[in-house]
Length: 302
Length: 290
Image (tube, rainbow over all chains, first blue to last red; front, side, top):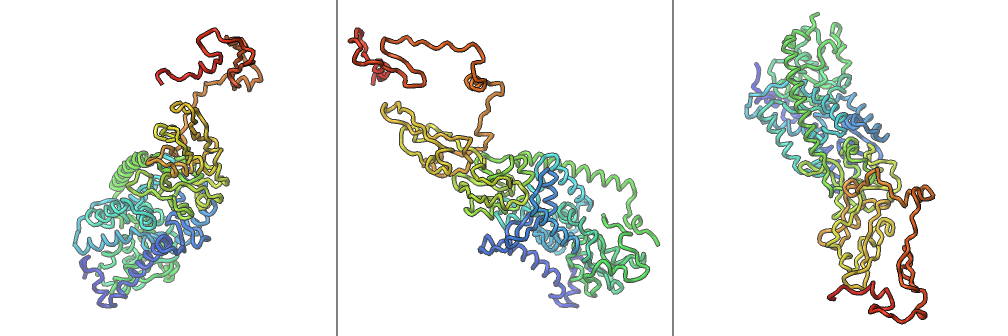
């Protein structure tokens, strides 16, 4: 029996207790806020563990970390960065290639907290209408943000990128950034379900491309137990990624969620009262004979 | 085994192309909008000055990834990042000379911190930085032009005597004093803004401006005769005839030298005219009515 979206998670709380039904959500918030706090510890309390922001930073004055997407935009505009920037981008790339690119979205990005809040409120207030846009729009926008620097010579996207602007706003100075963030919140709440992160954000689009070979995956290992409550679909920011893994047994599709749009947020694990999902690695998909390799179904589900 | 791809997506080719075309059109529109927005948003107001070593503004906006590491490494905390709603391109670093000028650190930590070379790492001598150019823009209010001793800008200049010199000019008002006029030299001024910060007026008379705003440019067809002559080692046209001054006996005039010279004061005959025997008396006479 399918639950209503606003009731998603209630069964899980009953079955596992509140903390277990929010485990990954709490860990994610701890990660997002933790990253923010070590960045603001410097300017606010003089505790300089890391300086800079998500675009580029220096940990303990030694370890450079650079956002490969922003660096790519800069390089398209025709700049030759310092070695430190390449090293920093390589470290970040390697990390996300292993754990899944969109881990950035659900475990690091500050906008995720805003859009998650909008999504939760949308379910709670039972707002059902949603304007239609293709989920592949973000890849077009990603293309656009990489073409514009070549044409204009400037990093155009970074003038308006809500991800950088919000993070920089908190760590440096906010200005009118909150207007932009409020706009995204209202857009997600009233206009389009998972509108920003799921349809338009080119940052997420870029990072999803790093997810194709990620080792860390969510797996519907226990999918036989699924009672079709639909809670995971209600809370998932990219619900299209669940179906093949959860319902694909008949077609011989493995239980691992291989779609690169999965953000590894683990919310499906939390809200499932019968513990269908768990974190796993991509190789466990081949453990049973007769299971198709992941690539046989579309990674770019739209 | 059935391929799940086609059966799952549930759209036909026509729908696919329609959606793709719609998306492409709206994204292109967005791109045009973004393009125009950046044209406007990328204009840097003249009072915001980029850190030392910043590439020319157009290149800088492509190279700077808005990480703020230069801001963090500035020991004097003068750098800020533009924020949304400012006139300054959002996230890009700047300083305002009047409130916080560049102190010209010898090790240039802000440049060192830049991961993308938006602040050019080939800048190793801070005196070679060209953040802008100080311009004594308000000569009506600068008190030096009123004959008052100030020279604060000259004295705080880190390249004192090269970037700013003081030139003495006669004070026509008092007739007996000098004006100590500060002169900025673009071949040495780094645009650090210490002079603007120090200017004692309510609003600075000397301001650091972006180079392209501060500097004029001579038409490329201009040739200065005396320079061409020097270059060629001699006159390129018919040599000038040396000017003969029509002066009383015993008086000479030396151009670019002493000026009027009286050869022998004692020997000169008594004056036969209403004017003084010393031509300087005539030349230096006060304006009528004073």
